[in-house]
Length: 157
Image (cartoon, rainbow, N blue to C red):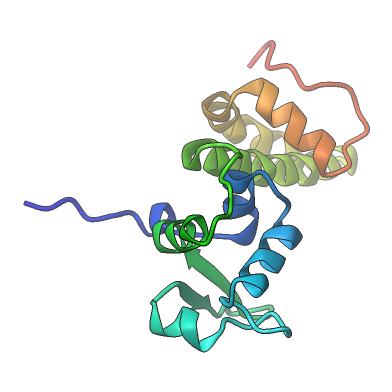
């Protein structure tokens, strides 16, 4: 029986793909424009559509965005001579997860500061996920999103 691919293993954000190529999400978006996969306005090109390179995501709230087929997009750019000198797909995924946890942590901390026990509950439920991405990567993600406090330790959890 053939193993099905997990949706998020196949479809990646510009941030995740950019990390694999060693560039920011903005720079990666510009690479897609430069090599004909995005239009000047940022929308995917007809070539990207014909190649099945993107998936449009329309959330219930907020504006639609696109996820890009990791393998097809990477292969196309590499075939055009773009160097891939970033982190592995797995590391990019872990970095994204660490940023999500960091945002949740800051939300939990704010709730805790306001006297809500929900903040404490949220943090206690994050501990296992923080360990999965590594405490070091979690603390780096906190700094990258503007956290000004001391490094987080998991002592006592």
